[in-house]
Image 1 (cartoon, protein in one colour):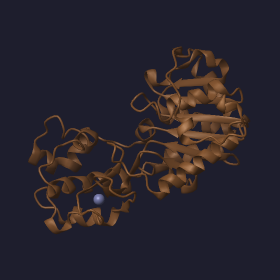
Image 2 (cartoon, helix red, strand yellow):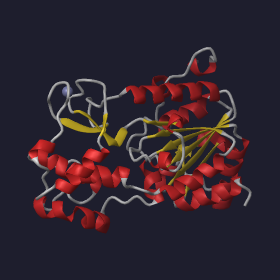
Image 3 (cartoon, helix red, strand yellow):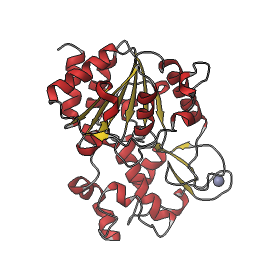
Length: 317
Ligand SMILES: [Zn+2]
């Protein structure tokens, strides 16, 4: 009943209490009707909460494997062999590098390629143009900063899983992160045979131990002051929006980490009749709980196309 009580503030932890639906269906409404339904939900809303997963970056053109990987990471494939790891940026991140010089020799390149140097913002920018005049907030599991690059103010973003631009103490001995983009560029320049020079290996300024990317891969993930500030803003937005006309727009959130966006979004719809859900994905990712009826639309289509169609519908083009 917590959600019904307007006196209670909604926090990120309360939000995270969603559970998997048992009545998922793939809606069989024709595509044009689904787009019209999504357009209406967005037009009717005063508040929009975006939830973005990896599928959003992919739909916008971010690439991780294949020729893209071979062209940029071929030097590492030569050193380490292709094996199970050196196939794409995601798998390569798990390679057991023999030492810190090799680890950062690789990771500086990955962090820059997937983060600071990634520019797939046209689709993000187009999407944002559909929400002019609305109160907007983004919850994202992406670490690539693409919505921010597309112009969404950082104050309206909560990226829960970290950033390709930041590093932290590997053991998380203190709750602070460090922007490493310029350091990554220096490492990238200095790399020889896959390794950076020993003097460039970053060390924790507090405990002197190894550093790591600020990406949530284990229990040592550092939630710094900016992370907590974003969490607080998210809670404020949701506390204000949950009793208003709120549209949840979920973008490429699959079943890898459904507990952060997918299930909590479903719980919000389940608990509040004033909240609607637009779910964009491909294949089974687009399934929605049948019990939501007309308050949810799950569009199973190429997301670049469905986003363009929704935006032109909302903007009246
Ligand atoms: Zn430390």
